[in-house]
Image (cartoon, rainbow, N blue to C red):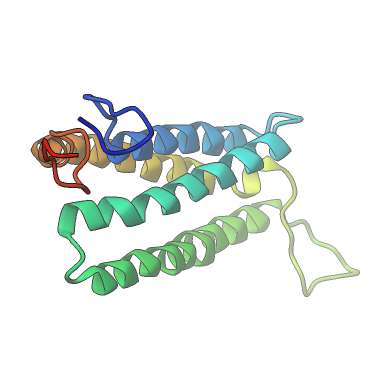
Length: 171
């Protein structure tokens, strides 16, 4: 018997499945960015923002369920470190390197402005978006593996319909 007003389910979908779904949606989004199809920029940007929001909102309860709350502060700081580290690696290093190489390929001798070079067109960041799609593909595979490995944990947590309240026959 459940102690909540919401009906209890005997089967629940693990949060890691939702993480996998958002990773797959992010792959599609990055491929849309890489393809540079007209009219997809705003929709792909909105979809990417939703996926990031779902990822960050799912990570925190997933970590607390899997590892407990004893060292949660340490785990939360590691989760918080992922965003700036990824931004540095993918935006700072990879995107900058790809952009500079594409700009150098497009550079034509210009007598008026020889100090700045720029890149025009979808090729400037196409490789970056393809690498990001590949990273999301790897994340999807790892999330599926995690889901299979933690299945016993979720079965134990949700065995009685709710793991937060004790199950008693008294009212």
